[in-house]
Image (cartoon, rainbow, N blue to C red):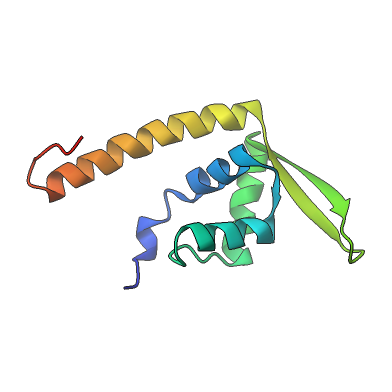
Length: 113
């Protein structure tokens, strides 16, 4: 079943911050990890991923560094900053409240928690 892409638009930053809270990653690694963890629901293209990472970097939530790979090409690694950790905590709280409210409405007002 295809998922409406507009449902994802507000949560991409949250997903990327969550991945980076676990370890430093480079772009393609994030794409693969999101695809695997979501059973192929989240299948980002570079044209989607990198503008979001650049925005997160501009806001001070992530830092980037370039390192040479075995192939000789440089990889850009992303690291979550303290400000990024705080943003992740805020966004997780916001997401849980939002998704809980949606679930409650879908279940007819029954709280499942």
